[in-house]
Image (cartoon, rainbow, N blue to C red; front, side):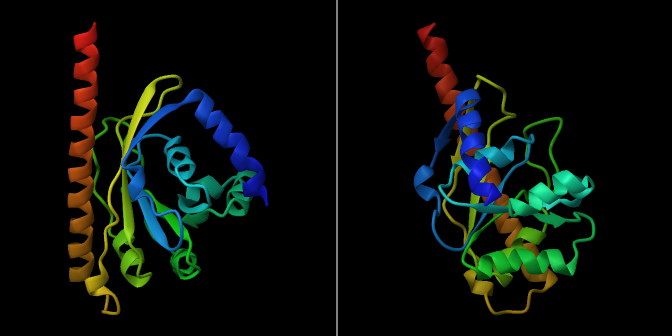
Length: 210
C-alpha cells in the first residue's frame, strides 16, 4: 500500500527535476519474472530504474540503510530486501529468489556499491549470476551514463535480456558462477561503450549547431 501511495509523488518529483533520455526502451521486460541490473553512480539510480516500469521493482538494498529503524521500516514496506554485501544471509537470498518464484522483478546493483570517482564500471559481483541461474530468470542490463544532476540532461541505455538458460537445473558451481558473471560483465561493458558513442554523437551535433 505504501509503495502505491509514494510512487506517484516520487515519480512526479523525478520527472520534474531530472531530464532522462532512455535508449532501448523496447528491451524492457514489463511483465513477469525478470532481474534488472544497473551500474551504480548515485542514490538517484534507484529512481531511474524504478521509473522505467509501470509496476513494482523489488530491490536488494545494502543492510546499512536499515540501521535506522524508521527508515528501514519504510524500505521494507516498499518491498526492499536488506542485504549484507560482505556476508549475504540465507534469508536475504531466499527472499530474492522468492521474488522471482512469484513471477516478479528483482532489482540489483551488481557492482555492490556506488562508484564515487568515475563513471567506469566496477567489478561485477557473482551474486547476480546466482539469482539468475537458481531463479531461472533473464537479466535486463541497464547503464546510466553519469551521475544525475537536477535540470541537466541524463542518458540511459537498456540492453536486450540476457539468459543463462544453459545452466538452469544444473549445480551452481564456482565455474558456472564465473562464466555467467563474465558474460554479464562483457555485456555491460559493451552496452556502456554503445551508450558513450551515442552521447558523443549527440554532443558533436550540438557543438556543430553552435
